[in-house]
Length: 124
Image (tube, rainbow, N blue to C red; front, side):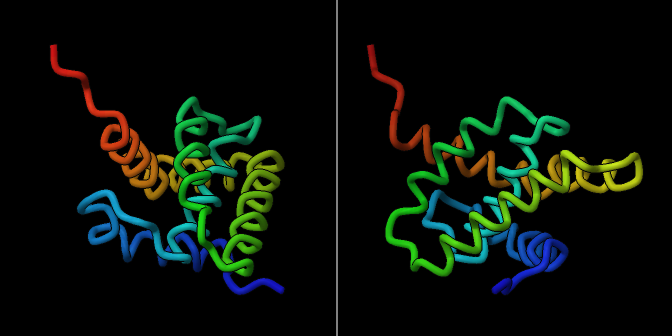
């Protein structure tokens, strides 16, 4: 059963972006699902980016302790986004790129911040 549509996830992610990334923190289930949608877009053969690897590592950490329904919805959102991106035409491609380069960048930034906090630079 699906709880969120792609448009709903994007809207929720946009609305919560300002407060969601003020500091490295555990993502809410809704943010986790939206971030997995971003991973699907970023790992597609059409819209893929090198940032997908960092986001994937971040989401592996974020998957710990999730309720099964959130994990399942996230997996479905990722698969749906990848499928959408791989089958996109010129019109939908522009919309998906805007989502990837807008909302998804915030998740990539959170992944980078979390990675930096986990592996601080060594003092000489």
